[in-house]
Length: 219
Image 1 (cartoon, rainbow, N blue to C red):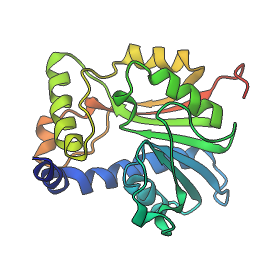
Image 2: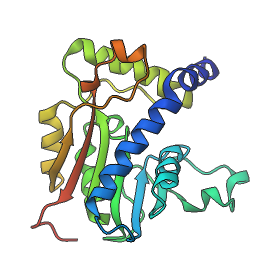
Image 3: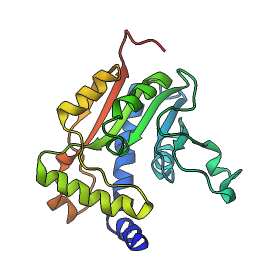
Image 4: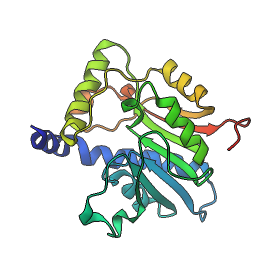
């Protein structure tokens, strides 16, 4: 079943989705730093196989990534060039010093951490000034069921649990407030699925937000 779901996920929407997500996320990060020659240090939290970070970097080479996730790195990957930028963390405390990065990214990660999302956002605000979040908004029971089905197809095959619920606009705002972060930009619809999936999966189920550490928050 797990192999089937991984194959279905990759065959149906994975490559198209990753490309569109990476373009949108990379664009948001570049907008934060208008100087074209600035090297931007970024951390991808919940990076998985690092495909998102690497795709963004290929189009935006001035963005230099570190990556972290809760999984132990297999022995055969230790010392390989690709995985030198990977570091395991415990799921709550980021193993980096204050203000280590310009940007922290959570791409389809925080809904797996409810209701503790504000704790991770606070950690992100500790290690970086800006936080970029790609996640989902549920609009009711039907959209929740749709998102859970997508999570089952996209994540269960990789051993990631399917959440019971997702953010709505109010709960995401509350999480940001509790973390001491201000929402600078909100894109509340992302056309990331190819036809014919785009006909049945509303763009408003996806959002991309840029957050900034509040001025009174010190690190």
